Length: 236
Ligand code: LP5
Ligand code: MN
Image (cartoon, rainbow, N blue to C red; front, side, top):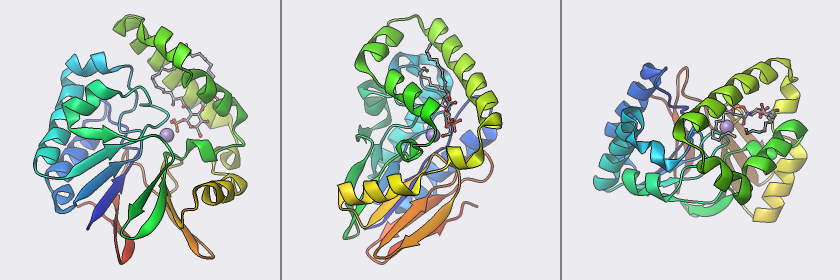
């Protein structure tokens, strides 16, 4: 049973090259897998499932649906940019939604799957922001606004986040080892797979391992796992 993992594709109409690369992945290598897990930030910004009328978004959903119809089980868990993906997108893309921090049996190894932003505990400003925008009340209020207004808010936030990231120390924006150890202990998993930090790596701890997925803005890539373990799958 071959399972692929990818995250941080950050699809956006302003980056057609990334969309092309991802489309080729879905139409090609992904078809060899039995399962594909998307671990958040599939989109650079998702402002609600009613934005599926947008041709760019509809095209991505259709490409995922074609993969699902070819027999690949696709699952998605939310990132910090597309946590508003809901059942409308899931139906259009033929995928199922998972909560962040899901333990799955991957080739016989209990594996904790998460986006990874919850591990960046030193970034207090981000964590406060996350608590706000993940609250059901805030989301109800936001989704009730017209699409154009939501798009404007998302663009403002993207700009603000980019500016803040230039001033935040790199270590602050990385995963915190105490949070990693706690996540292993709380989940009972022997393996962890996540994205978010864009710091592709394979970290090994006694009896445990942690894979950090790459982002797709520049090169991209996926992780392939089966009963023999995991390895990087480079894209052509
Ligand atoms: O994703 P990445 O790596 O670029 O940056 C994250 C953190 N930034 C974010 C913000 C998103 O990047 C912006 C795009 C979101 C689009 C989503 C649209 C749908 C919902 C609408 C939005 C509410 O998550 C960044 C981290 C970084 O990772 C590293 O871990 O540092 O965190 C921030 O930049 C957050 C700031 O520190 C705090 C921002 C406070 C803003 C307060 C406004 C609250 C009200 C917003 C609604 C009107
Ligand atoms: Mn992210």
